[in-house]
Image (cartoon, rainbow, N blue to C red; front, side, top):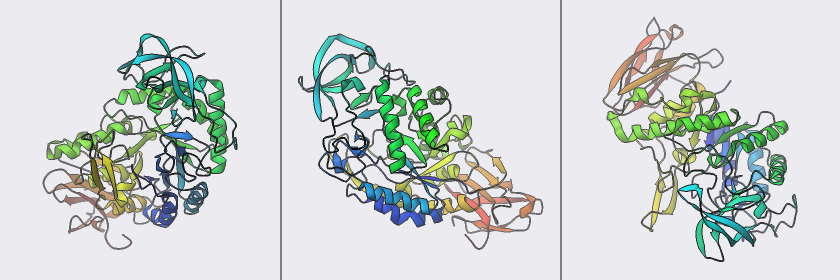
Length: 497
């Protein structure tokens, strides 16, 4: 079986020219050759900013670039027909598509309503401030451009638990809506801000059975219209685990092998992420934010970081079957809310750690493979030009995962500045097997066993970072060198690599 590798096929501020779905088609063959087995696409539904929307500002889930709403027919990424063509093209290359699904909130309501709310303390949302007040809030979604096609469901204030703007007061605040489900927020696992149910926009009320039914109906429709192999659920930190479990169970009745990964960003709180996975009955994997934090820290501390600890205290260590490992994503980019950019020198080392080992499901970032360019407003209020730099040798590391990283793994995490491991290879993958060594310090070497089946074979560095050739000893051992601040991946010398 080929090692599975996911790719996030977009970055924050990807050009709003409607080209992404077609771009995915153009890259399908190349991605297949690199060993990509699944592509995570950005939210396909119309956002509140129409053709400029990222999709995380969800407006109409049923509008995949089909209706003239919010000033455009297409979304930021293209039309519905182009999306469907992209999915077909990727599937033809045996690449599954993971849909980015935004169910926590809605934005861009069509009408206001007069509703009763409490202001809450933004730093402790359990604390109600003063008496209830009446405000005019954007909570009614009628989707006039769609005219009831696919669904006639109208969203109103009974479908939401909170908002952040009172139009009649011209006031930005966090308000919890007084509705038939009581006052206050839905139960979530996150401990921050007292209760972190509210994130943005009009926060969806999952205690409303009609809302849950509508979201199930939409899920079934979406799967039919844009057949996907899995979902990336946005903002699960702010959603009640019971709804997530219920929705995934429903979707898996329609598609038994549906993959699911959630965005729960708590890089310094592994325990809360483990609690969330328990609360959802291990139905959903999570991006390994604590591991990303280790990689980020290692890249900043250089030779002062103890590499023996780099895989500790993360999902990969505690529950590897639910760990989706990353080096970068759209939220960690420069000037983004969760900015934590792994430094360029360390990225090849980080990717070796997630791509060439036997545990975890790695996700490669578009910007690291292809680069990117955009403008973004910084905290100083000015526009900044940002260039996403390609990760050196990432294509070769992907080939390394696809062709060589199989079989028994032996670890040599025995030095604070130099770690390594070997994969012995297996019969199902001819010429497989590799030895990986990385250092955040000086040039060095490490004696490691790759297996007697490789005795006498000549090995060379797949990445070209070290010029030597090495012959494996009769006992299956060899001394594998590495250049300063670098990684080498030793594989059988000669073709096909």
